[in-house]
Length: 346
Image (cartoon, rainbow, N blue to C red; front, side, top):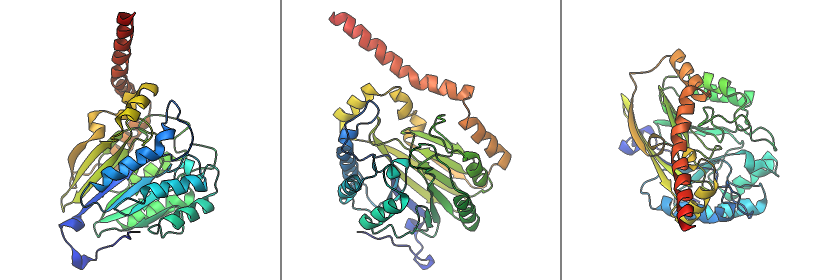
């Protein structure tokens, strides 16, 4: 397996200013039949196609999986997952999702991951490391028991997160976790139960912080001052995509580039698109998919501003309802066309 290399300060270069990686999530590897929501019977095919596309990207530093690697935690499914990604030409690491423990305790799941991925040198399901001098990566585990999709960050991890952020205020911080602390849309049976506590820690800091997550199978990017919350869709639910993320840290600004890359298996994608409800909401708006922008470090926002923005983002407000209405419009148009087509055929 390819191991991580951390450059020293003496090896400083433009490459050390840039973090270039792929975020992929919710691959749900299994032998189960597909459902109306998840194309489970094609899970291995979809992941294999993603691996091929990732290998065509030049100069990546690593690939980060943010949980639900398998749909049910069995040795067979984990073996299939690692067999499929063994062709990756870049090192990979992962956060854990709720499905990664369905049927397997955390200790066994952690031992299984460490067995197949030599890059996973950590003793816990949460950890931190510095791939480059400009960056700190914090990986969290918000899973909350075997039989629930809700999440909760333990008191120990809350302290761990706060300590890591406090010690790395001079760096760009990337936080990877399965459950988003700022949801792409409201879902009470999928949310983190102590999201407020997590977000209260985040808003204290003024350095650039990017939080990447999955779990909701939705495409969403929210920018709140120095904070960026990135939800990436599942590989088994429309639009069946992953993200290529490139961050460059300059003295006075940070340049972000988010590129959404969909599966090449268009027949499977189209079949799933016709079966899911509100596929347009899962696909997101253009600003949630592929976007590039610059954050100026000297224009930091107050804690109060960020707190209010997060509160508005996660509440079922009028703004959210308008957004959902916009996203749902293509579905209604398509349904109308289908009805008209059937009428003409009759």
